[in-house]
Length: 323
Image (cartoon, rainbow, N blue to C red):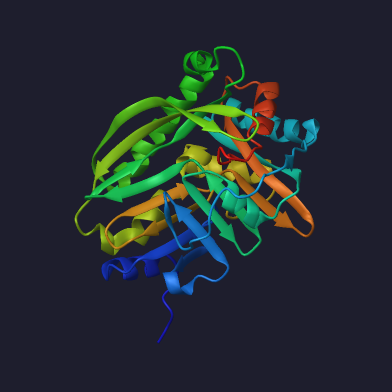
């Protein structure tokens, strides 16, 4: 019997209401779908649903930030800004890999990071993401794009973030993009909550982030089409940009390397509901080196120095309070 793979396997398992975990890379080249008895050296936690019983929060995490060379980042930023001037993109999420030093293993990071979506994959990478991609429950599909970040240590940080015109413009753009994406697969798409503030704490800093909630109605037959739905709306708009197809092409030129699973998605289907997150807050291991992947949205109003600083600010591990 031929093995069913990728998006088709999701449709097949959904049709039989069989639970599964999945992870999909940014380039849509690796669509991995696992029944729970098929996971080997892969540990996940999707909003408290997990495939292990190992206690959390037992170790202190020590991370030393590196810095990508400013001129390297400037080269990528300038390429993106030129495309903005040409009108080929209106918003582009530019990312980089920064070398870091860790006194812990990737599995330690998995066990001690606090996040809605966590994944340890075969000592190759660990992800601890705060950002939902989509949730499906009671035939309603919801998306929660996060756009707008500020260091909470700055005086009046929340007020400044909410009033920032660049961040507001970026948020409007991404909400429109997600509305359009959901309209491909759902009816009656609406913004049910716009630009609400969230707080994310790490062991040495606190960040503010702005999110919105967008919803749409699905047919009760959505279980049979899980893979097809995801294929139509990937990659995630919040970590690519608008217009999506052309912006992804520019990302490939500006970043000059594949993202792989970074900014892809991971999630769990329990036979009744589906919950998937965007794989940001991501550390990968290459040989004896560790790299933290981070980025931010670039628009006409973006400032090179501010974007570079934001890139560095996002290099952190949110930890349990007892650490």
